[in-house]
Length: 140
Image 1: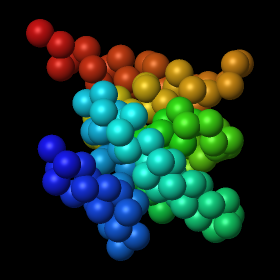
Image 2: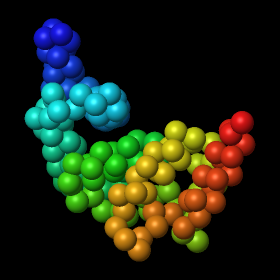
Image 3: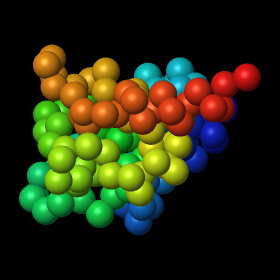
């Protein structure tokens, strides 16, 4: 068990690992309920991601899935991530861009992230409608 913990710590501490892989690893650790074991390492990774995001001050090149996962994890850990990170996914009428309708994983994570937005703010105005049309056909 100690070897496994050290392997996970090494994966979290590897600065060469791409951002999405680190975010997915943190998400998996949390979903397994063992995040308390790696609390310091997770915090360090998220601090680095947050600082990189703050310093870049440019619009993200992330896809919807990556942006929603990053937003949710950072917000869950108390980082002040602006909700405007989702603006790049809106069209001129402030609606979800049609090209994003195929990103089912991104929609699911957006739904999770939507619970972490500030009161009175909707990430994307027609998000619920689009999510409903995507998810209902998948239901038995």
